Figure 1: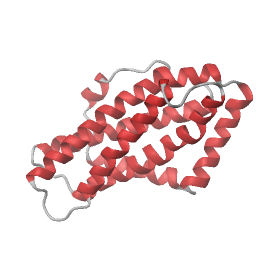
Figure 2: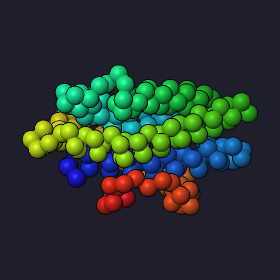
Figure 3: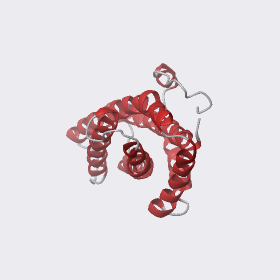
Length: 203
């Protein structure tokens, strides 16, 4: 598999781990257990910056743009669906950030809304990742060949430097590890997730 697509799929694996952690956090919140606002703020920060600004940013600004040059429509079809998912996800993350930004103990209504937003986001983004791994990325690999694909990988590196800044990737990986350590994903639920074809070697 080409480096640019490998990069995106490796990012998917990290995002899935943090989604599993958020799922554990939501269960804790639903049961009335310890669920600090600052931890929810950490999830919102990770998904807003790493999953959206960095990962989805590379897709929208670089991959999808290149696919459009190779004849793929952006208003409908697979790219249109992915863009709609990205926009939906931003709404959920914004809602989670707003809830995290409150003060004092959680109210019952806040807990219910945070759990709802978290679970809706988890379900949507897991489905989105499966669609990209199994449909969109294979289509990109068929359409983008040779030098164009090599240039895409270089373009991803330039995007991270220009948009995210030096050291951003490492900071968000560290944040992900802290969240996963604090609220570990349920191994059974992670194992039960649908496998993506072409993901071997990217666990």
